[in-house]
Image (cartoon, rainbow, N blue to C red):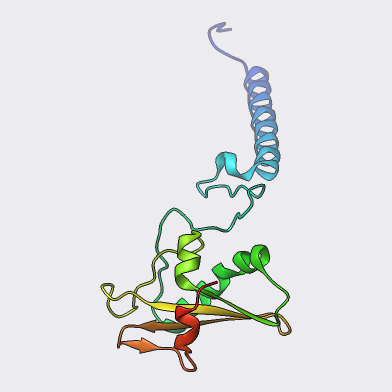
Length: 155
């Protein structure tokens, strides 16, 4: 017999040990992924221990294709502001400059022309748990029901 190399039993034992090792590593990796998703993920982890975890993301823009979509995203990003700054009023509002200054949203530009800044406010109806954004983007766009007195009165 040729004594050079592995026998059939040795090869089968090696494959078994290799598969067992791969299985153990896979289980441990899955467990680590489940417990600490930010370790192996490309998505940045959000620090939920921070006072305002939903503040402005690093990108600094809100990408949308319609004004309705833009209004909805601004309303969504204003929710943490109202959670921290809510009063006893049934209907409250916050201006876009206040949200920008407190880093809840970036500067808002017109969907049609990125050189046109938008002004406005978000209205919060506590009774119905409803957040509504009102925008005015130069002469290009204005949300129906927009009240200019809320735009200029600060919070």
